[in-house]
Image (tube, rainbow, N blue to C red; front, side, top):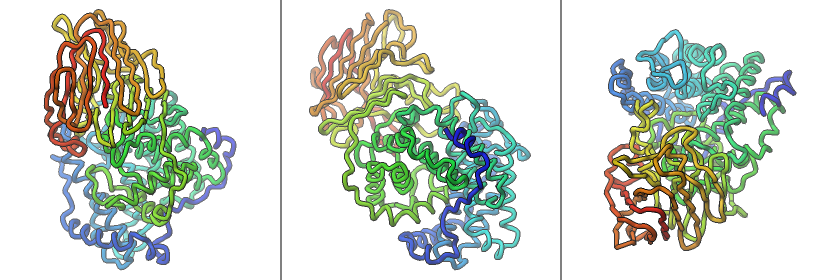
Length: 605
């Protein structure tokens, strides 16, 4: 798409991308709604910055020695969060008060041996990470690119002030971004840049957006650098878009929307500014609009979203970026969702993130500050609630009826951030989780390794799916593209599919037909199989289950009435101790196991 548009205008006159008014434009900065909030946050950040979190060698090697990512990343991200807050506060106040701690943090980040994370320290995709970074050959990963964009924004906003107070610091800053990000991006090929048919993921647009920010702000007067960057970015974005269906569904789940579709939005905005008139028509493309609106269709109520893969049910609060994306593609539902979330958000500036990696992108903060007034003034007249939708590219059916919202996933087990969850479903009643997808634990060395499916949350028996028991063996789903649903048929209010292929070769199993339909009263589930042995169906819930004969009560929220070839029902408490899971769930979840043969019908309502 983009490379074709660029081929039609190869000699475009490069334009300039301006992220916001310069700090010297006090009329623009002094009137921002967030003015006082950021000054207050800056005071706290200045106190915290008296002790810059250290990044010693043993912390880097923690990933190699123990598989733990979190300890190094906590300190790494803390540095960048502090810098963002201090820069925003200095831009608001324009007094020089925050320049000394800003300079200390800039210096500390420039002194880091590497900007990539230990978990990303490799040059070939999906290969084991190298123990130590090669300082002569930087790796441009997600957060190296984020760091480059952050320091480029510091240069744009405060470069002159820093150089006046600490002569030579701005030159050091820009030189490090050039050496660690821009030259490697120009001269080497990192897998996320795209290579023909090779599958891409959110890394592509996320890294590309940040490389564009750095180029646009460090080389605004270089037509050659701008043209080269535009061409590279256009190719990478096309490689990213090829893996999306026309329906715009994010196979990685709702939580990755902000890293995939929203970074696509920003990258396209920057490209439109750098190459005036070349890419403007992309905003009218149905696929781009569908990608924008995907998050509105996945929204259940309040803070909850339908989730699968590594996605949490708490997929984030919508805000200014979503609003601006909706405005660009003409989506009133997305603008309405973003405006409502932003109005209700007690932390509109994103200062209190449970996820360490959030709050480190200075441009997002600037976007929010300068977009806040428009978002708060928006009135969502005529914004209809999203209805049922079928996403054939991923095999995802979203249905709404009465008090219920259901997500039913067909597809296969080769998605990015895959769990073995083909055929699973999530169900909400009155905006509360009823049948759940647990999500993913804190990332570790095992998470993205050949041992990934040893992790319990990745396994089909911890999703709302069957397992097969016979001859002393237990059969669960396998990972890989060939382990997929077949004969998938969207129905009014539901979905029908055969799950047997997702389990591979199971003796005696050739068909497991699952049919799920949502009506105002609840969800009807019918599972039929030719498997001759015992089937154990898992039902995961947040509400404690109580069994009464063939009835399962899920707290006071709902109940499931079961009939068919029932053999028995068991329940178990599942302790939740992982820090990442505890962000979404209480300390205990529950698994109900329904044992049956042949056929099972369940009505859940």
